[in-house]
Amino acid sequence: MIINTYKTDNLLFNTNFLEESSTAGLFGYRGDLVIVDGGLDDKGHPNPPEEVLRGSVILADEKVHMLIGSLDDMAMLPTLLEKFSGDFADDLAFMLFVVNAKERAVYELGATKVAIIPLVQGVCWNEAIDELALEKSDFKGQTPADKIATVYKEMKDYKPKGAAKSMEQLVSDVTAQKRELWGAV
Image 1: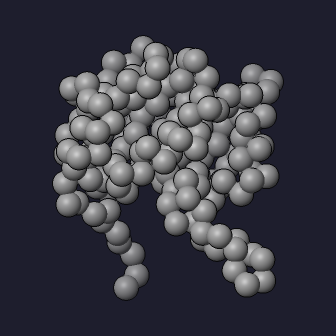
Image 2: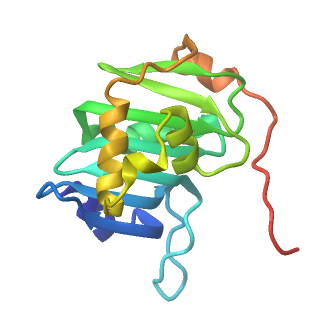
Image 3: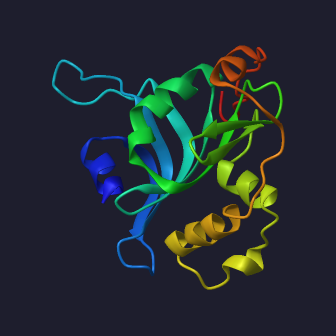
């Protein structure tokens, strides 16, 4: 399973959960996905990653069928795709929240229409559920991994809003917005 390979390769960070769904061999993951690792310290322990896909939601077996997450900077999208696109299934559903995205957009990645949505603060999971107009009752009695499978089923019929843009347009059409953080000072 590709998600177990990610775990072995230390690409899963701040894991909320990683578990098999009720469909054998289909795994759900919530947490951060490492895009650029932080290298190793002088004792050989991994440093925190330099760049992550925050709050990622992944549904995968041998391939990734759904990917939802948040980037701090649109400039990381090419690196994300370079690192992981070989793992994407033909039926990939992909929703990306980007802090410095100027406006909603659609990026075509093969047959997949990637939804690009500006989001300065918020939780990807909650925002995706709102975007898909799902209700708590849609998830009643489901395991966390099965909830991800429910989101995936809904994303199959989802039509992203926004103008179609090339990678060059996406990377250049950004704001100076930074992620809003909160908590103890």
